[in-house]
View 1 (spheres, rainbow over the protein chains, first blue to last red):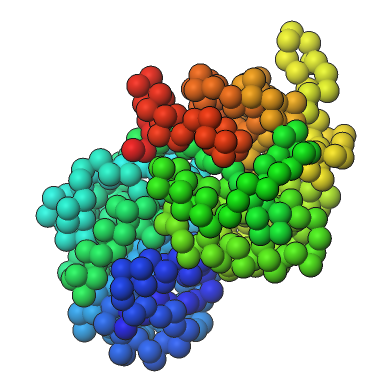
View 2: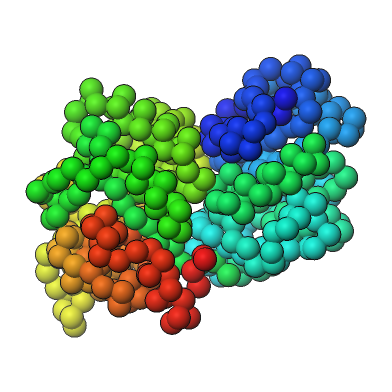
Length: 201
Length: 255
């Protein structure tokens, strides 16, 4: 079972639909203890960083999540779910993240373009990425965000995207993956990425 | 590079797609699910559904349609029409919409914009502005008034000032329709679009008036995305044709 974490922050239906389409048993779970039996964990998310961490903490997700990641369970963060993997965020103040990946979440500089960035942007694909296997360089994915991840570990960056600045749009570190865009909304290419994730699982 | 978006718009009533010409004279044009799938396969970058059913009772029908669309396509879609409260907004997101657009309720109660932005994030809050030219500022620069209730009611608000206000309240995107051009197929209202684009730093979708490939090119030079309805429904041209045309002229589009 693939556990999609429901912590009150996202359109979970589309994520589940994408995994179901790929023929997997994906469940939206609101009970942290279910993570013990999960083959893989997906942390989606839209909205603001601060309330998201409060919800994760308040509903008791933090410990089971850290524990599952330490056990090697494949973990995928999508959009805000990727940002939460980092040490901290500057969204509306300073907030602590999960600290699984080194780095911080920052607002796009004013001159980067319209904020939020909404739409299809391209991936500069690191060819060794497992999440992006058979995804060609320059592929478009659907992004909606005002903040971006500044990853300290260059080896963890599986794809970069340019929007005024160049930033990490896919991260990959051991059993942890993150996508700043929405693979479940990125058409056939996005489905291929989720399929790649499943094949790792 | 961020691609310019091409967005087909589907007007829906009682869960069925209809087509608007100057906001009157609707005709049934089919099943929303089939159309959504077809547009997604054609390479639409996202879809917009505007519900023109006025009654509150029909809300359930709309939500069912949204759920079915969400279970069919893997591209983003926006749903608008009849959003009167943050609860209505939430219902659309829960049913699977990626964004929801607010029009009349935003004008009558602007706080709904900030409430939705705080609760659900600016990224999913689209404010639809229907503008109609009402005068000139001099030096050939126009003034446009905001209309609500599907274009039937004048509000006395200036469209440019309203655009600035909705941005400051937390809107993530503006869907700008020229009432004067809607259904005419004589081209987007570039002057209005430019005035709004210059006034805000959030994405602006131009709507109303597309009739030729050149119109899409002209519109996309100004706006972040262009929306069209009847041209695509009537298959006067396809999304592929539009993207080929734009791409050949150096516009970044997703293909």
